[in-house]
Length: 380
Figure (tube, rainbow, N blue to C red):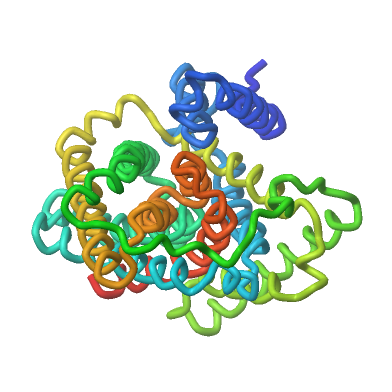
């Protein structure tokens, strides 16, 4: 009996890969990769072994996950963006973060002008530039939002290669930001440290909240209704990307007290993202990896140079305006690596007062990243 055409069997296997990836991601070795990348790697292995279908023999289930699950997962993650609370991060952090977001966009554009990656990447280059702008502003939510709009996730090997390059560049930038304050102080002294007005708090993070029945029934309705509205609007006004409408609805709903009190939207969104990434892994056929020889080098140079420009602009403007090098490093890491790595940096520098602001400006990046990503695609 051939199970590889049975959607229930395939879905069960994908769910099992998510379980294995989350557990593996908590191990000492697995932490170096992260659960998201491990999901892609695990499903890529089993797809190439013929245990589940790959891109060459794709099934309707995969298309359904790309079409419906991926955008709705982004919607759920955006329900944690509380714009009113962001002001609690304080003007220095918000100002630096906006500088960092601008620096990311300028870095991508400068890197594009110098390297001309479109010569190797073709039309995919513009989409990749938008994806990297999004992820280096607010994280993988924005990366995937841009990718989904242009069906880039169906380019399995290239998509996975872009994620791998993003992981390498982000890791290198974590190392750079850890050493940046000590290096910069040798020739450009700090001003008096700008202590945030936000005190340490015991507030729960979104991922700590349990999903209950009341929240689940509302989240399912809101996700499906928001998708229907965004899809219907795109049919009327094709120029407006449906994912942009969906993101905007999510951000607006997140500001309401009722939606803000719903529990588990982060966990639900994260699980659906893992399911989406599992299909990405299934699309990665070894036979197509040879395509990434020159492309992989181009991606690495393009992303690396863009982040380097980001760093130079943030250091220059941050030094002129604030010159609290630890804060500059934390904010830059919030841009490039997201809130989680920014928190780790704040803890490493023993700047406890910057932990919560790092989380808050991270949500600001989630709100901005998709818009800046699409802006870059249109500009190029």
